[in-house]
Image 1 (cartoon, rainbow, N blue to C red):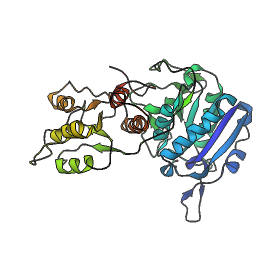
Image 2 (tube, rainbow, N blue to C red):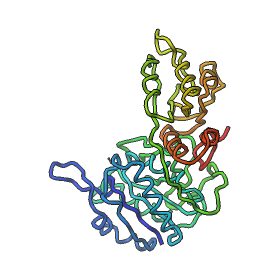
Image 3 (cartoon, rainbow, N blue to C red):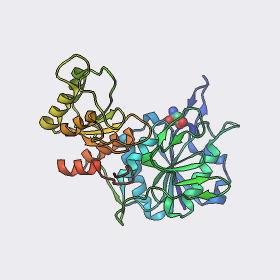
Length: 338
Ligand code: ASP
């Protein structure tokens, strides 16, 4: 038995009077795919009101995790219908909140609504349900199914607003590829997970994400860091490099970061602006500056997964040291250890 959790997104949208897509209910949506029943018995629930995914945030992630936790024993798997814009954030959040997950939680959506003649919604919905029901161990985690690939949820990135192949997973091979059959390729294994499901509650939204750019003013960085934040994801250049200054100004960027770690105990994690590869803070002198400043290495995490992981770790009852260790550790397959 599969449980569908409908949150909104293009997949179920209809055209309003001005031609713009607006969220709609799930009944019409499911009426268009009666054959779903041939794949698995399904029931559904709507996270009211169905929304564009830009209107889904941390409180909804907690509600989704609770919803799944309360029904965990009763179902073989869960499919979450979700807009694509923030799907990767939701997937990352659920991967941390659903600790000890041993059943599939598969998010899917579409670039075109299911009511359009030509659409990708139908295939994505049907195949996501098939994957959630197939019982293969490689589906037993939070995944994103899109087009023809099942990706690890906390590794996926929305790469296109046009292509049906909208998601990619630049640093982790797909969990499965779907064509005439389903191929479960070898992938980065998950670290050992607890046997029992624990649904964590608590996310601290006092976090920020900053992309470095040539000319970034230390004064601007200082302003951000002195604000009400407890964690910062720094999108660095290449393998974790940061300029010594943001221009001619003084003090430099590294000095600002050093002070924030030392004086404010700000949790700062470095990820890369680049699509593929990993942060290695000892590769260049320009990266060592961050190590010396006390900035943590985000390895090959995507920036949005690093951001959500910060929210998660800051939201749990942990010591500063446990948070630092958690951030650089591979908790749920979100990073490849060195
Ligand atoms: N704006 C839409 C959403 O994220 C886009 C989509 O679903 O593809 O809900």
